Image (tube, rainbow, N blue to C red):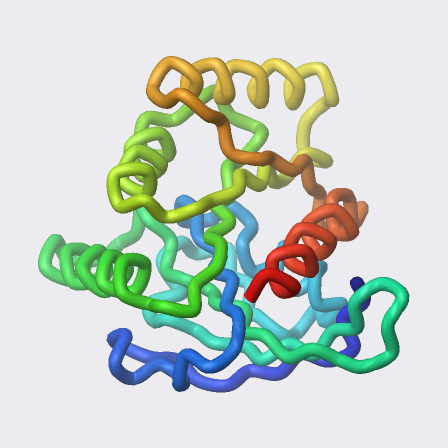
Length: 207
């Protein structure tokens, strides 16, 4: 699948303000500073689409982008939504603000009827983090399908990446019967781009 165009639509403080659920939708989330904006820009081929920041907690709303892509072997474009969600975990905000974010995200994930998949980003530089495992437990509890995206694999050597990915999957295997599909990515090297877009393309066909 090839992305032909991507444009920002709207940032919403709650699910009721989101665009009408009339297109297949795919959301991206992860701990603050996990490289989410860089990954989204890499997937869409536009370095300025999602705003990147070195300061955690910059994404505070439900950000919708409209993507036009062409499936493999076809010429007619397909329209779908890509959603950039606020990061969970560390951010220099008040407890009240953090709780509001959590409620906004939960409402979106549990009530957005056209949401087909949530891609959960995991920083491959680190050993398994409890906050990531806890979030994935919530998704399973809510019966929300997800994929794992291991990011920043160009920042450490491949042996470290392999160990951290294996340890994370083992930690997750101890908590659930089936493991979600996972992708190894680097926004810098564009690793994983084709496989993630292929996954999205397959799900769009099922919409």
